Length: 182
Image (tube, rainbow, N blue to C red):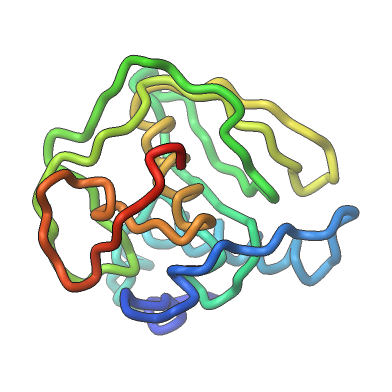
């Protein structure tokens, strides 16, 4: 079972690397790792388990956050209509995005960042993601609202981007400039 001690914190170089694609067909080891990532998110949202193991609640987790430079993410969240997104994806890519932008009013947080970072993180309001699921099948997800923000945050991790890199005017020793096309 993954716990907070398994989560890599900001400053660790793996969080700034472009993660390597996961070979397909998927290995049993990669499938197990992704399953453990999703299990962490589910456990972190269960108050009793979270308290017992001192887990911070999370809705998304990328492999670099557990020290693996691999393109895999896990997401466990719902949208405004209570539709659940509880899945793992391998080699996810955003293949289309809206011109319309959005952001979380309270800002974003990250399991790899042990401090509050204030500021608006601009995100696309709607995206389409193409990826491989745990059954080695290509999937496409059309996302909007909160799930779209979560997926963009996690896919950023696969490109070595931290959420605060996107905050305009934010000055921080960990921040770095990013290519606007990412």
